[in-house]
Image 1 (spheres, rainbow, N blue to C red):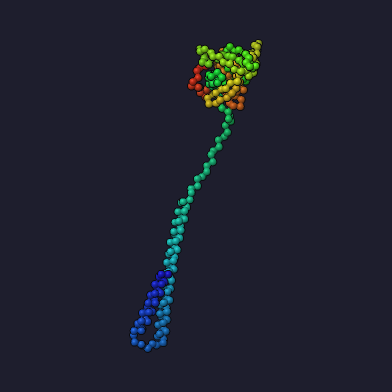
Image 2 (image 1 turned 180 degrees about the vertical axis):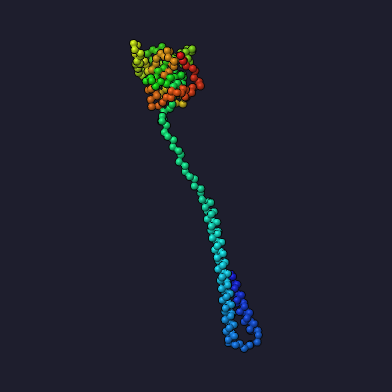
Length: 251
């Protein structure tokens, strides 16, 4: 547009110059044909100048359009870079369920703490035995407040140290079948709270003289049912209590 205005101004100035020149000179007779030819030429020149200005303006607009397109492309690239990166969600690998479920593992031998006698014992985990048994000596039954109780001695620090005496309420009695020719053994049963490593559990223990056996405490199937499984190829999976004194072990 600015170039077109300049062109028109230049044309107007040329025409004005011509008119001024004519006014200052003395009147000259003009032939009509010559005048018409002159006017036609001036018209042609004006139209040519206008066309040149239009072409220049069109070229300028085309260049400006190209520059605008380039700027739009750069802005689009910047907007793409600003987009939040999409983090792929990785589905965690699902581990197969444990074959033992919520149960904990026991070895063939474990160190077991019995809260009722405040002592730990080297314990045999025996899937062949139904009930659990604790080595007790001098077992004496008595009655207290109308209930059956039992007093018994336990070697809490091994058979080389004096036994300690404990009392507990009798939950029931159990008969243990003996070998052929021997009388069945009727034993009092107490309820006990056990600790094996970080695990805690409750079970019933029958009291009997296990001096002829290797381990003072035996845990049978009733204890393990629904809470533990046994790996007979391992021992002391859950370690031993640091403050526990060695229990009686007789071979």
